[in-house]
Every structure is written in C-alpha cells, then in structure tokens.
Length: 352
Ligand code: ADP
Ligand code: MG
Image (tube, rainbow, N blue to C red; front, side, top):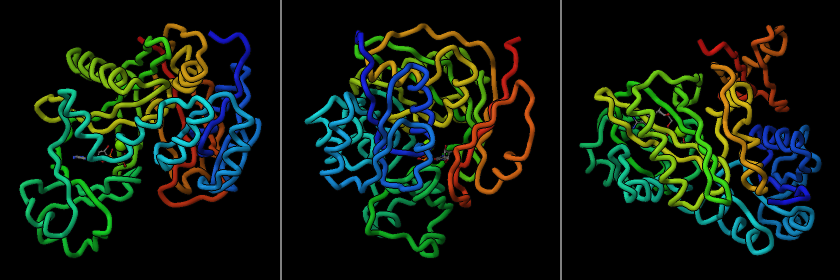
C-alpha cells in the first residue's frame, strides 16, 4: 500500500476521463490527461491536460515524466502506444488485455476458451464470406475493431439486403446471429493488485438503436443468472490478470440463457449510477485499484435509474431544475452532435 499518493496519468479525455479525474480529486490524487482532442471535456475536471496526437512520442514522454502510474478511459488506443508507455511507467490494465479485447473476434474466442457462452459468430473478410454464411441471418455484422455505441454495425435480416448496405470490405467483421433478447445486464467488477475483488450487483440495461438508453439497479433477474454473471466476470478478470474496473455486458435470451456480449476493459456507461447508489463508485474503485490504495467493501445505499442524454436533448436538461433525488451530469462537450452522449441523469430511490 502506498503512503504518498501517486500522480495518475489518464489516456483519453472524454466523459469517462472526466469522471475518473473527479473521483481522483476526492482521493487527493493529481491527474494528468493525455488526449488527442483539443476540446476534450475532461480538461474541465483534471489537474493538467496534454493535447497531442497519440503517435507523437515526444509529447508522450512529457506526459510520462509527469505521472507515476497510467490508466486509460477507452480501449481503442493503438497497442504500440500502450506498450511504449508500459516500458516507462506501470500501466493498468496491462496492454496485452487490450490486444485481446480490442478485436471482437479475438475477444469472443478468448471468452469461449474459458468455457463461457457468447452469441454464435463467424469471421467475415469479404462479400463471399457474408453470402456463404446465411445461417447467421438475421444477424448483426460488426467491425472487428473500433466499433462503439452501435457504430460500425449493420443489422441484416436476409441476404437480399446485403448489397444495399454498401459495406466497406477493407475492414474485417464478425457476423453474429441475432438473439431474441429478454434482457440485457452488465457486471461491473474491480480487481486489485492484491488479487482481491469488488463486484457490483448486476445492472439492467435498455438500448435504443444499439445505444445505451437506460440503466437500472436492481436488475430484475433470477438468482441463478445473478450469480452466474458475477462468477463469469470474476473468472475473466482473473484470467486476464486485470487490474482496475472493467465491465462485462450480457444478453439474456428468451430461454433464460446467459450469453456474454462483450468485455469493456474500462469503467463503463452502465456503471455511472454507482456514483449515487454506492459508498464507492466504479471510478473511485478503478483509481483505488490502479494506484494500489485500500479496498473498501461495497455498500449499496440506494437503488437507481440512469438515463443517457443524447444529442440536443441536453438543451432541455440544462434548463431544468432537479429534485434532491436527481443528479444531472453535464459532460460539458463543446459541440452537440446527433447520437453523441452529452450527459446523464441518475434518479435514486430507497431500497424497499
Ligand atoms: P457496442 O460495442 O457498440 O456496444 P454491442 O455489440 O454491445 O456493440 O451492441 C450494441 C447493442 O446492440 C447491444 O447492447 C444489443 O442491444 C444490440 N445487439 C448487438 N448484438 C446483438 C445480437 N447478436 N442480438 C441481439 N441484439 C444485439
Ligand atoms: Mg456494447
């Protein structure tokens, strides 16, 4: 356990970076953010920000000189940059995890190798592969890399739709069979350098057009699924030798099967409500883990519902007044864009 607080470097300056920096401030930990976006909203919340393209090693070295330990807020940072960072400063979670999880195909293979069920999927490299895999339709074609919030995804019902979608076959994809979803849940777990864990109870998620719309705690699910989801998340964190907070997203199908959707090697949108429901939120736990601070047992104080505020919906939320049970978070993004996450609203309620 450290006696002097380290300076934390965070790669990425979006809302997750902002919330990490806010949690760090509470723990009296200084944060330096590295971002390629001059308008990065996290600059409003951190102690210092360095703006640079991620491939400018000179700037990365400046960043590394200022920090004691490094983490990141999004998983798509080029692997060679994370590797470079790891030569000079400890970085958590470790870059090799990103290499597995950045690519949907290697991610799913890894999950299956642990004996955990995912959707049925196949690697698609060209149009012929797609035409030859009609058995996976209706399904979702997803880019192997760099997809998020439903970006880089095509819902395909049948073969006849394929040519109208103008799919860019310079990229690789996976084609996943469509699941008839009964529910979606996520598990937020924090693993510490000491191999200890903290696992939040499952969170139930509701998506609109493949973007998270609402997260609710408690999830209304069977005890069996509750336990199975937590056990799988714990197994994966252990196998990955993960340090920090991560999220595992699951589908539950009509027959009550638990099907792992994806792993996010970072704090996650569905865990934002933990800021208001728990004694220690997902962001603080991430910092406690990567900075090797004390682990505090989790205690839930409230149930809650969180709504994502997308695009120009933010304007009405900025003008509203809120009750003492409502917590409005404005990400302070300079530009409003369609489908862009601009803020969220968490409403807490008592546990009975
Ligand atoms: P992202 O990386 O963009 O979050 P996901 O793979 O998690 O991509 O997909 C986003 C959402 O789209 C899911 O949470 C789910 O609501 C829907 N979806 C994705 N794949 C499937 C599937 N195979 N069957 C049914 N719904 C799906
Ligand atoms: Mg997802």
